[in-house]
Length: 307
Ligand code: FO1
Image 1 (cartoon, rainbow, N blue to C red):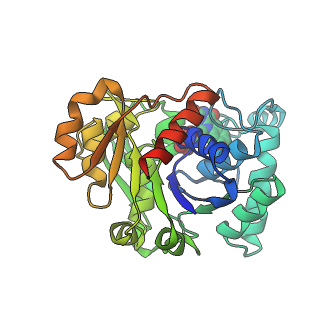
Image 2 (cartoon, protein in one colour; image 1 turned 180 degrees about the vertical axis):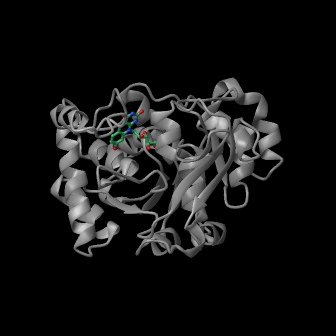
Image 3 (cartoon, helix red, strand yellow; image 1 turned 45 degrees about the horizontal axis):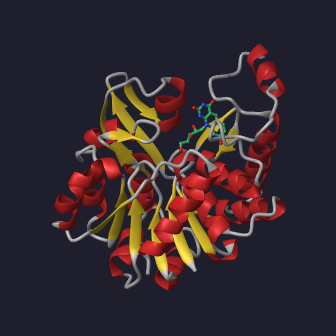
């Protein structure tokens, strides 16, 4: 069994590749929920949904989020009522948020709801939120403190970020099964997700970092940064805000206390020596995942690095 730590879009590409290269029943995916928020009175969990829809084969691969061929009639009507329309919730996607919100109100945990949704959608891999408790990624900007989705979607990651924090993390507990899965895993894979807003929230849940440090099994990460730029999104800017160098070496350093191997892009091969001096084995390989073939090839590269 392999454990995968992931956020949404970037991580979903590797998760999809892995699910096609090994038996998906052997995958336990621990997913960031720091991006979760409430909109229209509904509990939205973007990363859980992106991973679930991708593995169910209904995700919109081009956008990287939502359901393919979804329509937006409800959103248009919500706008007419004066509701917020900056976060594009599709009609079919809304059914997921309505169901999740109803079950949460009935007292069902987020991890149980996530498991029910993935089973209904025919996903064979196990998907677990990092925690059933509310942990919220907050960003301090010149415009004040805002949530991740306000920063990312509403304000198009234009603000300069001074600080990133995870409200509620210190009181949170890992969701049932997370620590045990990491302890029993043959290997742990850290996806090429944003180290600051996708992976750091997972690591901020008490206990998770400690079991990663303690495991004897290999832990491998794929750099989400190539030549100081994120493969997608604002990871390079947020790395600097969180006090890390915005490079594959900065990613290796952020994870060095539990990481055995990092896979970096050929453009960054000059960083290999510096990263290996941190005690992290460095594999140089193409890590861009634009096509399904790329996703499978990177997945095979990750699996080969575990041997
Ligand atoms: N990202 C956007 O850039 N714009 C959107 O309107 C948007 C809507 C959306 C709806 C449902 C969902 O599950 C995800 C959605 N995302 C959207 C993606 C999301 O904001 C981010 O990709 C993740 O939170 C980052 O991992």
